[in-house]
Every structure is written in structure tokens, then in C-alpha cells.
View 1 (tube, rainbow, N blue to C red):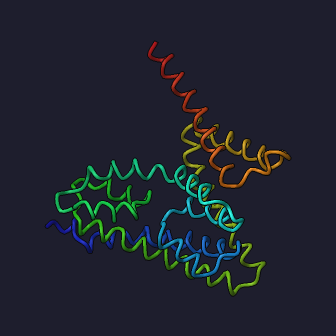
View 2: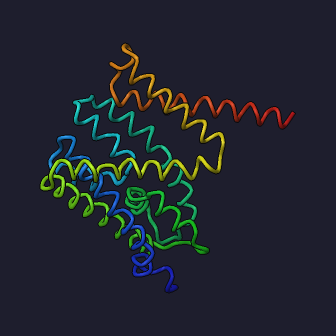
Length: 237
């Protein structure tokens, strides 16, 4: 087996992802405890999900006693991209990766893991992939634990300040894509406008948070998908 396709090389390639996840997971831990979850609940969520945006959207729904349907639909919409990423990544797997391995690897197939594995010029092995997902998974889980413990110990003023990191993470995700694409920027602005409409309109403000996220995300995405489709037809004509 080539050196660049071993378990240890996967560990090495996963370390930068791990370090990045620790800081985000730390903020998630604080955010969770601040919304009434216990330390063990916050850690359990991270250990069984490994999806930053999905987990962050789930915490307010759980804290406000939302329904399972609301929670499930929210996660389906937010995490739908991972299905496409997993299908794409499966084309990079060599013959050592079996069906059970595919399920386990898909569990930690995050944006960063996908990017690193997909960038390899060769097919990736079973050992390499398990090494690649191990350190990010540990970083995400341990970061959540430390953040949740800090949120349980630190003064409220300090934990509130540290919780701002969560919103910084969302800005860091959205801004680069918005700068590259005008349609993406307008889609984000439309989603924000719809969210404000739900928040500040008396009748709409009663809609549960999870369904608000679903409606705003789907509506904004559908509008600009139709616009881009129309532009494509005009270009073909």
C-alpha cells in the first residue's frame, strides 16, 4: 500500500480539520448549555450527528419543545447536501471499502473531509478514510465537551460573549460563497428577509422555529433555482 494511502496518513490529513472543529464545537457546547441542555446532552448530540449547521438549528427546536416532525424535516433540509457529497465521494473509494464501511464513513463525511478525500489524485483506501475521519470526530466531540463544561462553569456574561462565535461561523460559511456568486448573495438576502417577516409579523411569528427555517430555506432556494433555470433556457435559445 502506498504511504499516502495509509491509516497514519489519514490521521495526519485529518489533524487540521480536527483543530478547526475544536473551536466550532466549543462554541456549540456553550450554545447548547446556554439554551438549557445538559453537558451530557450536548456531547451526545455531537457524538451522534457531526453536523454543525444541523446541530445548531436543532438546539433551539429541542429547547422550545418542538415536535419530532419539525426536527426531522429541519435536519433533512439542512443536511441534504451530504447525500450528494457521499455519492460523489464513493467514486474515489478503492475495492477495500465495503458496504458497512460506506455507512460508517458517510456518518463523518463532512464538508472538510469530503474536500480532502476528493482532492487526492488516487483512489482512497479503507484505512486512509478511517484515519481521516477519526481525528475530526474526536475534535468535534471533545470540543463540545469542553465548551459545555465551560458554559456550565463560566459566568453568564462570558459565555454569552463566547457564544457569538456561533454567528461568526455562519458568516464565515456564507460570505465566501456570496462573494463568488451574485445569485447566492441574493438568495441569502431573500432568506434573511423571509426570516425577518416570520419573526416580526404577528401571525407568522407563531410558526415554530424549525418550520420557519424550512420554509425560508426552501422558498429562497426555489426562487433562485427557477431564476437560474430561466436564464439557462434564454441562453440556450
